[in-house]
Amino acid sequence: MNHRNLLHCLIFLPILFVLTTSCEKFSGDQSIPAYLSIDSLYITTDYSTQGTASQSVTDAWVYIDDELIGAFELPARFPVLKSGSHVVKIYPGVKKNGIAATRTEYAYFLPILKTIKLKEDSTTKLGTMKSTYQSTALFDWMEDFESISMTLDTTSRSSAYIQSTPAGSPLTFEGNHSGKVVMDSIHDYFECVTHNEYDIPNAPVFLEMNFNTSNSLTVGVYSYSGTTIYQTPILTLNPTNGAWKKIYIDLTTTLNAYTGMQSFRVYFSTFKEASLKESMILFDNFKIVTRKSS
Image (cartoon, rainbow, N blue to C red; front, side):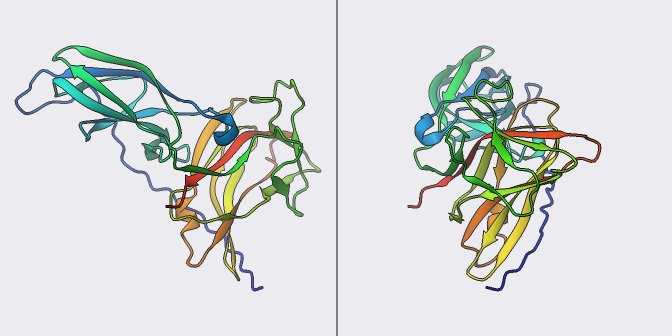
């Protein structure tokens, strides 16, 4: 097999994203707006089939009678130049790849539908609302480190390895275990890949994960055809200063960057930071989310 190994770094171009505020000027017949307020959005799941309900929904994308009113950072109170009864549709929004400039409706969360009554110069309070995954969402890979075996393999180049946190450990994010990698002067390089390959679908593909790291960590994919392999880094996660974070990483563009690619694996890699005597990477609740074929 003729394998080619190509490193291809994605460049993220800033996208202008304007959050609508209540300071806008209005035109038209209605001069006095009504107001909507949303406190927060959260996600529920069936853990056995959809994994963790951990989420980082930062925005609400609001449509009224199928007209986009705006995208609002939560909590939000915003004006609407409508009155009377209307159907509001709210899509949970996230920071794609953890970047504030790439806020987007998350492709696999259900929109929230409500019929509301709007009154000029009055606020309709929607409070805290819940969503879940769409019924068409497909979870190709989930790893929560609760099983005896792992679905991640360290490579032959890796001097560091993955272990599970002990039951009851304060390092664990949720459940009984999380994944842990400790790096020092001897174990100074870490690389692992998903055990299985996954078909590249004709649909958006996202990697979800929780992480808490004192070391940078690169996330990327290996793409495979019958004769070719491409290794493509997508982004590098920065140290989190002891905090757990949730991220939604868009794999779609990378998976479709090369003609003829059929399947992929996700990989993680890093060298120990030179400034650290010892570093630790914690992660949990990996999911590859895409859509079922029609």
